[in-house]
Image 1 (tube, protein in one colour):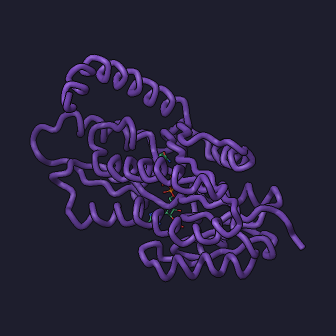
Image 2: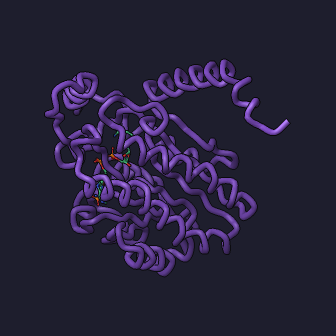
Length: 279
Ligand SMILES: NC(=O)c1ccc[n+]([C@@H]2O[C@H](COP(=O)([O-])OP(=O)(O)OC[C@H]3O[C@@H](n4cnc5c(N)ncnc54)[C@H](OP(=O)(O)O)[C@@H]3O)[C@@H](O)[C@H]2O)c1
C-alpha cells in the first residue's frame, strides 16, 4: 500500500498546476489533478505511474462535477492531504469596457470554484482531522496595477476568504495558505489564458501604458514555476505554514510597499478612526 500524501490540484494542464503535478509525481506523491480537458492533461503530464496519478475532467463551474472529483479521489487514494486551488486566469481592461458577463465569469472561476472545492473537501479533512489548503491568489489582490481592477478584486476576495477560513478550520487541524505570486513564466499572459479587453476610450493613460508593459512581458516573467512547485511541496511539510506567502521578489516588494503605506495612513488617521465610537 502506498502511504504517500495525496494532493488534489485544480487547473493542471499547464503552467503552475502542471509543473506542480509533475514535481509531485517525480517525488513519489499521489496526485489527483483536474482540468477542463483530461486528455490534454494526460498528454502534458507525460508517462507516469498511473497508480499514483488520477487525471480528472472537471467543470469547476459545476458543484456536482467538483463533488464527483473529490469522491473519485477518495475512491482511488482513500484520503486527501493537500488541496491546491490553482485554476484561474487574468483579466486586463477598464471596468467600463469589460462586459458584465465576463466579470461574472471570472468571479465564478477565480473565487466561486475555489470556495466550492473547499466546501466539498472540508468534510473529508475534518474527518481526517488534518489537511492543508493552498489557494493561489496574486499580489494583484493586495497591491494591484492599473487595468487589473476586476482580476485584483477576484484575488482579494480569495485572500479574504482564506484568512477567515484559516480561523474557522484551525480547531480541526486544517491549515490554510494563500500564495500571492508576482509574474511567473507560464501561459498566464498569453492570449489563450488572459481575458484582455483593449482600452479604446480616450484617456485611461495609466491603463494603456500598463497593458503595453504586461503584454510585452510574456515569456520574460522572473518567476520560475519549478521553484514555485518546490516551495509548495515544502510548505505542505511545514506544521506552521504562513497564512500569506508572497512569491517572487516583485510580489515581496509590492506587498512590503503597500504595508508601509497602509501603516502610515492608518496612524495618520487614527484619531478620526477612534473618534467614531460612543464615549
Ligand atoms: N503566472 C503568473 O504570473 C501569475 C501571477 C499571479 C497569480 N497567478 C495565478 O496562478 C494560477 C495559475 O496560473 P498560471 O500562471 O499557471 O497560468 P496558465 O498557464 O494560464 O494556467 C492556468 C490554469 O488555470 C486553469 N483555467 C484557466 N482558465 C480557466 C477557466 N475558465 N475555467 C477553469 N479553469 C481555468 C487552466 O486549467 P485547464 O486548462 O487544465 O482546465 C490552466 O491550467 C492562476 O490562479 C493565476 O491567477 C499567476
